[in-house]
Image (tube, rainbow, N blue to C red; front, side, top):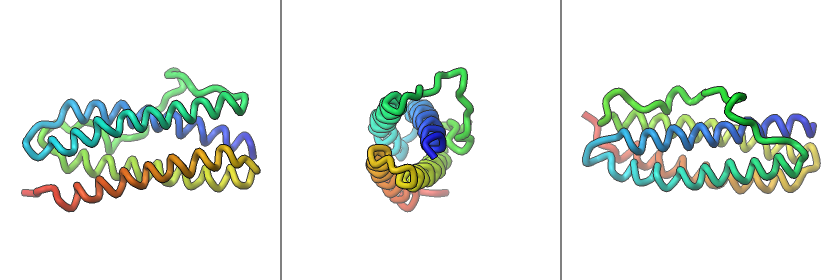
Length: 150
């Protein structure tokens, strides 16, 4: 059970860093008057996601494991790639929602596995990050409802 917790922590660590990369790219690439609020939100979320990765990395070390390096990295967030059309804010919003849904699923699984492994520290960490991811999802659901479409 402890190995499953460690494996899921490593996945979450890599996912957080991939999210940082994609949020940064999208916050730079997006253009247009309507893009500004989304860009600002992405820029704020970069620091929070990086903080999540740091917390997870520290927890892995406490569990006598190591956070994975770039050689172990596998990209998964195809929906969050910067759009060819820099004004396609909707595709970025939808990509963020997809990434947040994946993160929420990961952290819910981690809560469950940590509870089964009698690891309340990891469980608490997962609950804390889960709350942040759900808040991001709510914010981007709002953008999705408000964003003007052609």
